[in-house]
Length: 482
Ligand code: BG6
Image (cartoon, rainbow, N blue to C red):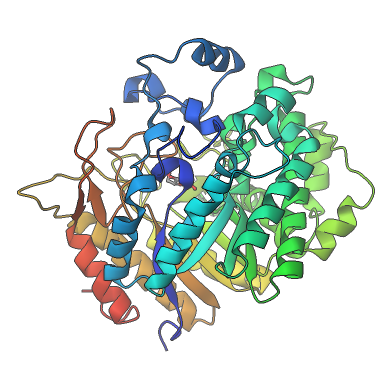
């Protein structure tokens, strides 16, 4: 009973949120290097703060003096990776999830030869992990693409991106096949719904297609690219495992009115559709009606369906932060895929950023997903974004410990119900720049990083109370959660 002996405990990050050094080591500019910091009032609780318009991009090219681009800074992991990985090792990590920055390997995406300095950086990072017996779990693409590809091809709208991505994937899989055993192709492939720019490198206003057609076309290209990447890992590194990933949105009906229940089912299908394509190997039939009613026509090429069917994920992975409520009442109905203003669930507390905290939802999701796919699961993101206070060199983050304790307990229950769970990498294991809001002050880590939203601070790493707590959790394989 309890977690399996070889359970992979660890933490998760992404290149644009930690690395910094945006113009060092031969790296090219990434789409996320152009996302600016906005105050809460400027964001107005709107996910569009992750978007950049083409006009904005052009204006930043002309002059970016004095503009705050937090994802260019990250937490300077590029120069601190040894110190950071040492701290992960001190906590007892078995796995560290990170992503490779495509523009660090192919600065514009168009070069014939990769950037050796970029490749060497990840060699060093992986070697450092292995020094402590930590397995890297590598996301091939965590949103960002070389910005040149957004400018020249309108990102994933163009089928050309499939070949360019394939070139990049072959380079990294060939290079790291002896160092990486766990891969994820796309981070949260459903992010396109929330932000076309972040999820797809799309400037929607430049497309001849309407929003939905443009997004679903881009998504189809991502599905094909993901399938090809899976095929390549299987061919070159047969002992490795390659997974797919979504942002999981567990949905409850607001009432037991069958109309609400149906509405929740439809929202749920819409979230699982992304995983269905990559784990089951094709577009589920329930999407046909959605495509028809929304006048969506995806251009597919011969062989696409066969490719999707042939190369599927070895494991399914997801991020889980909160659950959602669906209502058939149109005045309440939430926009599909919106995770910025979820309907209020009266049974749940919300975080400082308004995200409902629902550990039982994680158990429900694990059991549902295992029933549906019968493939091993990896929870690759989960955690509490909160404001931390540094007092006398310490951070007493009991609220984070409570959150994690409840979610780990929920996972344990699911494991005892028979769910095949490979591991758990909680999000932002070291404080990092938020993807959604570009704030540093929305902290998830076990390790405090002394930097603020403007990038001021020493960058010093400080162990929080949760650091010592997670160390005990790992040492006891999830038995000691006190
Ligand atoms: C996931 C992303 O959606 O959520 C991460 O994969 C992100 O990149 C995380 O950081 C938490 O979201 P946020 O907006 O709090 O950073």
